[in-house]
Length: 332
Ligand code: SF4
Image (cartoon, rainbow, N blue to C red; front, side, top):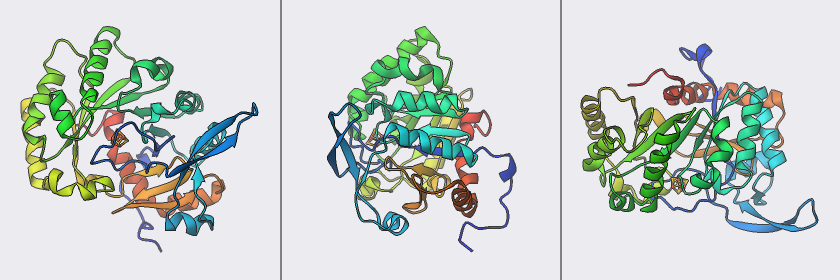
C-alpha cells in the first residue's frame, strides 16, 4: 500500500480532476520563488517534416524518471502531436480541467494550438502566464479558455522588481487590465500575488490598485500565495519566507478591507500534495516536499495510468480543492 492508497477521501466523488500541463520549461524570467518546470538543460537539432532543422530543448532526467523509463538520456520537449496524445490520454482517465503553465507557456508558439485542442475535446482550460507575450497572443487563446491567470506582486514596478519579477511585469499586467476594461472578457480573470517578507507591507496597496481603480478591469479572483521554499525558493528562503500565522493575519486583514472581493488564500499546507504536473518532456509528477515523477505519459497505457492515479487519489482530491476558486465555490 502506498502512502496515497487510503481507503477513502471525503468528498472525492464530487471533485473535479485537475492537472497542470507545462508545454515548456523555458521562461523569460528567473523568479526567485519559482517552483514551476525545470528549464531545459540543452538543445538538440532535429529534422522537421519540411526537411528543415529545428532546435528542440532537452530536459535532464531525475532518478525517478530514470527508474520509470530505464534511461538516463535527456528527454526532448514534446512535439505538438505528443502533447495532443497526452491531452487525450488525460481525458481518457477522467481529467476535466487543464491548467496550462510552465515555464512561460505563451513563449512556445504551439501553445495556442494545444489550448484550442484541449478545449475542443471538452476540457476546461486555464492559462497561467507572466504576461510578457500576452499582448501578441491573447487573440489566439481568448475564445478557448475559462480562466486567465496573471501575476501581480507589487503596487509599483519597483516592488515587482524587488520581488524578483522583472519590473516590466507591472506595466504589462496593468496595461492588459486596462485593455480588458474596454473589451470585457468572456473568461474569468485571476490575479495571483506571492506574499513574502519583501512585499508583505505592500499587499493592501496592491488590493487598492486592483479593486479601487477606475482605470482597470478588476479580477474575479485574487489568489494570495504564501511564499514557498520549493525548488528555486529553497535558496532564497531567508529573504522571502513568512510564517503561517503572519500569512493568515495578512489574509484576514485583506478580507476585512475588501469584503466584496473573492480572496482565495493558498498557504503552504494547502499546496503540499495538491498538484499533478505534466512536464514538458511528458512525465507525470506529483508534489510532496519535492516534485516526483510517477509515470511516463508518452508510454503508459490507459489502465496503468488509471492505476497510478488511484494510488494518488489524495493528490487528485487536493488538486481539486486547490482549484475550487475556478469553479465558483470555496471562495472566501
Ligand atoms: S514567470 Fe513563472 S515560470 Fe517564469 S520564472 Fe517566474 S514563476 Fe517561474
